[in-house]
Amino acid sequence: MTDQDNIILSILGVLFVVGIILDAVLLSYLKNRQPQVWQTLGQPSLFLNNSIRNNMSMIKFLWKKEYLGANDSTLNLIARLTYYFGIFYMMFLIGLLILIFFF
Image (cartoon, rainbow, N blue to C red; front, side, top):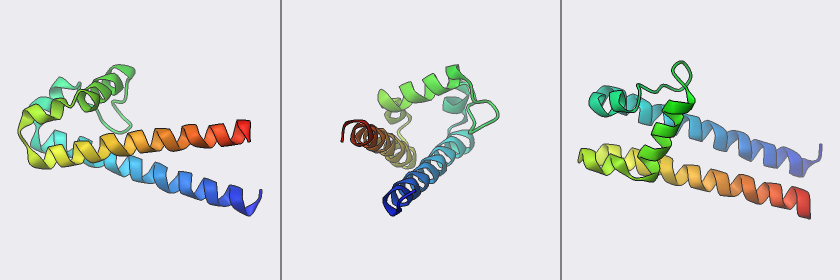
């Protein structure tokens, strides 16, 4: 592996950890501060109750900005950070794949 490969893998690793932390914070906040919303989403967790149905519920919750209906400014902040970070991460991965396969 080259130094460039190591740098790219390090960046991906850091971004992955940040994403996991954001997801964990969001799920914990929902469970502790918005239990009705958390139950409606299927009681999602980071690993244990992680099904396709729960993942789709969470994606819908973020993409359709359903969190705004809770009138909770902290939830809005955490959800927006998670949403925009997810978009950034996907764009970064797609850009990386384009660079790998086309250049």
